[in-house]
Image 1 (spheres, rainbow, N blue to C red):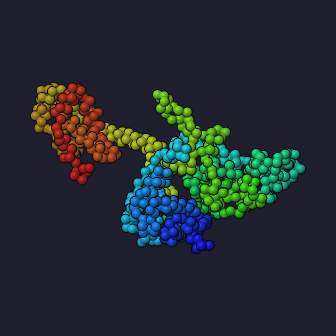
Image 2: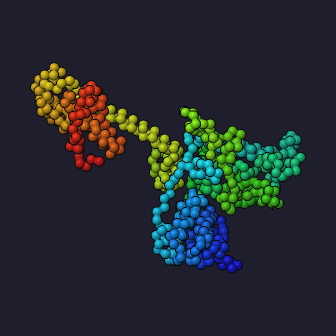
Image 3: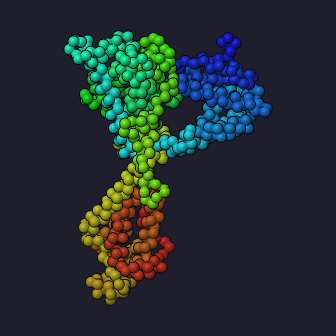
Amino acid sequence: MDDGRLVVAFHGDDGRRRLFDVSALPLPGWHTALAAAVAERTGPGGGLRTFAAATTGWGSLGRLVRFLGTLPQPPATPGHLTAAHLDAFHTHRARTAPTAALRELGEARMLFTSSALRGLVSAEVLDHVQRRLPAPRDAEAPAGDGTKRVTTGFSDGELARLLAALRSDSAKIRDRIRAGEDLLRRYRDDPSALDDKDRETGGLLEQMATTGRVPMPPGTRNPFSSERQELAGKLFLTLKDLPPLMMLAAALSERNGETIKELPLRHRVLEGRAVELVIVKRRRGARRWFETVTWEIGAPGRELHTPGGFYLLLLELTARSREQCGSPLLWCVWRNGHGARLKTADADHVAPFENSLSCTSLLPTVWAANRSRPLLADPQPDSTSSGGMSAGLPLQVSFNRIKTSMEVRRTKRMGGHLPSAAKSNTMQVLFRNYLSGDPVITSWAEEVLGEALVDAEQAARRAHDQAVRATGGGPRVLPGPGDAEALTMSGLDADIARQTAEGSLDTGWTACADHDRHPLTQQPCQVTFLDCFHCGNCLVTRDHLPRLLGLLDALAQRRRELSDEVWWQRYGPAWVAIRQDILTKFTPAELQQARTEQPNDALLDLVENPWELP
């Protein structure tokens, strides 16, 4: 209790604090149980251990209780709650905030299954909240203005343009502050060595470095003038510098925006090669918010390309503001204190994400659109004209899209091997939240699969060609009539021609000229009937066509049951021999006639081991 109010004090793992006033909610009969449940959810063993997570959970709870309080017959206590009440709340949220409805039901599930409330609500309610909640992942979500907000990753071209723009703007910020520091150093060394303009600017920089205050440039009286903003930017990072720097940090480190906002000052440099620091990784469960990472520094001058080198650069750029505000976080910037009616120097320098991750708006898409060279999305097919392409629209930029794109890039770099590609998430989360449905990874996977199929087919053709050379030149195809006289005229021995015409030499789908003498081993044949298609003893006449066509149909059915890799390895050489060396020797009319005589049983099961059948 605090001054007659029932409040829950929150102190998160991220160092932030807040008081949640339960007594301000309707339904007084719920207050004691709700306070205990909130304390459990936000306490040391709960799942809401950062300021943002606890605030989001509190907001969901408040909306639920306030909705229940507006009902004609509200549940006065937790025991009066029914499943119908929860369905009505879901319907209400689905109509007003469809993207948040399922999330708030999920928070209600955690609330009612807590030890503080589980024994107070009915078994019907517990069963209802623990049912499976569908959570489809849409490629696009509606924005506040009714348009579609893109949530998938960037294309390769869009990502390349974005990274180039981020590095370009970050380099300008770096060069600007380093030039100001150099002028300040030269002024301190010998003011008389500077020309009048640099001496005047150096004096202003000296005042800024000493006091942290940004004075009015000569000839200006407006504290919001562009001249004063420009002067501040000579030594300090400003709020407008944050979007390109933070997004480049997210891309290089392959971390989400929340982690980037909370990068710490504390770190270790390992032998000049890497930086070690402890970062915040949210949504991992109780007592699992922190992770130790090691980031490569890279060669001098390459700080815009490596996460460790860029982190050290950011420490350099934010050093003066950090001296003024004393924050333990990386991001410290100068803001115009006149806008907030602030009078002290340290109030001009702040860590914008120290109190809340959402207190400073970054607006990445606005940054992309307002550059001197705006970033544009790839042109899309224009539905209004046949075959035309629409002009490129402004690129929609967000930390989520950057994270998705970097996850896709790393997965491609690892050859699609998810155990190796999973870095800051589990394989399941990586696939479900980042890779599944992304057009870039889908296109890449189709390309890789197509290349794999081509490789498999070529391997089957090479295997067939090698077997043909090793076993006497492959099957001997005898087109035309299958009688003994015609076969003898084709060059067969008269006795073999007679036996072939009678069918006494038939095997599974062809005939064998000498079963007791394999061309390779000179011993009785030990291979399967599928290997006959590469053997020099194999004889094929027009009478064999119906069975061969039936075998092709059976192989096609196997292809639907097995993976392409297994199918090509097991059946590919025989399929190539039939399609390439046998069927091409017969006319379309002969093949059409054979199709009408095709048997129902292709006998494929008889030549395989039972454990190999799909």
